[in-house]
Amino acid sequence: MHKRYCGILLHITSLPSKYGIGDMGPYAYAFLDFLNSCEQKFWQILPINPTDGINGNSPYSCSSAFAGNALLISPEMMVIEGFLRPAEVKLPLPLAEGKVDYARVTEFKEKIFNTAFRRFQKLRGLSPGAEGDSPLQDFDHFVRAQHYWLEDFALFTVIKAANGGRGWNEWPDSLKARQPRALKEFYRRNISNIEQVKFIQYLFFRQWHKLKAYAAGKNVNIIGDIPIYVNYDSVDVWRHPSFFKLDRKGQMKFISGVPPDYFSRTGQRWGNPVYDWAHLKKVKYSWWVKRIGYALEMFDYLRIDHFRGFTSFWQIPAHEKLAVFGRWAKGPGGHFFKELAKRFKPLPIIAEDLGEITNEVIELMKKFGFPGMRVLLFAFDGDMDGNPHVPANYPAHCIAYSGTHDNNTIQGWYLQEAKGHEKANLPKVLQTKFTPRNLHWTMIDVLMRSRAETVIIPMPDFLGLRVEARMNTPATKVNNWQWRLKANALTRRLAHKIVRITQKTDRGVNHE
Image 1: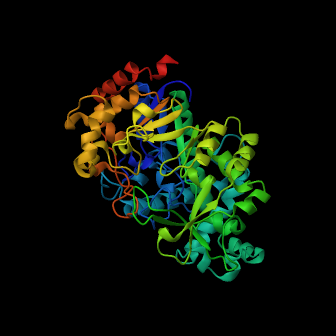
Image 2: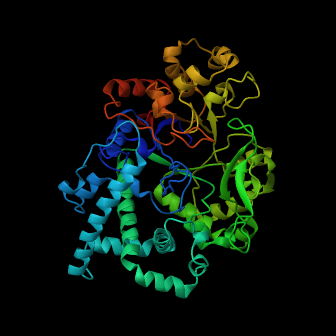
Image 3: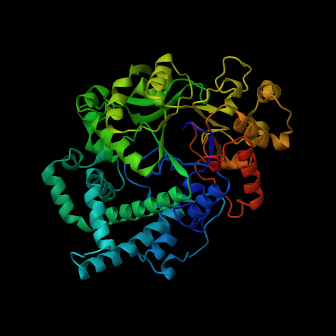
C-alpha cells in the first residue's frame, strides 16, 4: 500500500438480497462492479467465520478460526451451480430487507442445505470415483486440501448438535477429552451428518473463491479481518487446549478483555480464553502459522483486530466479573512476526492499533512495516497536536477511516453523540467550513485529501445515513450486526460523486 488508494467498508451480511441476509450472490458481484466503476481499490469486510448466535451473531465471536459462515452462502448461486432447483429456493414468506433476521435466515438456509446435500448424496451413490471436473471430484479435493481444520470442525459441529447445543466443556468426558475410541465410534454413527457439514463448507469456499476471482478481475483487493481471539466454545480450543490458558479440567484460568477505555468505563470483559504464548512459542506458533496462511489465501490484506494483544494483553482472572480487575501480560512480540515473515512474503497486515498504544506496539509495527489505523471520529477531543486521529497528524503509511464497525455513522455521531466541545472543534480539525447536512461529505473530502496512503469509508457514511445504519455498539448485545443496504442505494449519481472525489484526490485505480 504505497500509492494513494481508497475503498469501502461493507460487511457481506449488509449487502441486499431477497433471502434476509447479504450473501455471496448477485448483489456481491454487483457491489464489486460498483467499486470498480467508482475507481475504488479496496473492499473491506468483517470476519466471515461461523458465528455462535450467543453474542448477537457478532462476526468477532466465532466457533472456528478456519470455517466459513454458512449463512453467507447464496441460494441463487447454488441454483446456478446445479445444487438446487429454482423452485427449491422460493421463500414461503418474504424476509425483511432493511435488517438481518438471523433466526428466520438460519431456518430457511438449513432447509435448502438439507435438500442440496440429499441430492449430492444420491449423485455420489450413482457416480462413485467420478473423474473430471465434477462437483464430486471437486468436493473430494476440497476435503483433502482442508483436512487440517475441516475434519475437526465437522466432528465438533455434529457432537455439539447431538448434545443439545451445549459447549464442549459440558459434553461426555470421553468426547470432551477427545478420546480416540470415542471419537471414532461417534464418527461411525454420525457419518452422514459429518459429511453434510463438510459439504456445506465446500459450498461456502466454492462461492468465496469465485467471488474473490471476480474481485481480482475488477482490480479490487479484499481486506479481510481476523479477530485475535477465538471463542472458548470453539473447535480450536477443543482441539488445541494446550495453546490456551486452561486448567486441568479444561476451564479458563483467564479471560480476555480490555481495561477502561473510550467505549466503557469499567473496561470490556470479552470472555475469550487467552493464549498460552509460551507453549505456542515451543511449537513455532504452528496453529497461528496455519491461520495466517489460510487467511492469505482468502484475502489480499489482513486487518488483525486488537493488534496490541501481540505485545501485551489484558487478562482477567476467570472468576472476576469486571474487566477492571485484570492485568497486563506479555505477548509474543517480534519473535512471533519473525516466524510469520520467514514463511509469508509479503506479509500484508493492517494493525488495528486503536485505544491506548504503547511505544512497544509502535516499534513492532515499524519493524515489520505494518500500517496502523486512524479514525476521524476520534479527532475532536481538543488535543490538536497530540491526537493521532487529527488528519494533520497522519503519517503517509496508515489506513484512515471516517469510522469503523464499532462507531456510529458520521451523521449519527453528530446528531446523537457529539458533545458540545467536539462540535466546537469540528472547524479547527477539518480546517474547512461545513453544514451539518453535508458533514459526511466534508469529512470524506478531508480524509481523501489527507496524507494517508489508504482511505476506507464505511458505506453508510457515503450515504449520509444516521444511527439506524450503525453496525455495532460495543459492550451491548442488542440490535447489532443487523444493518443492510437497500437494493436501490447504489445509484449512478452516488457513483459519479464518489469517482469525482476519488479522482480529484489522486486515489483512483486508473492512475496506477
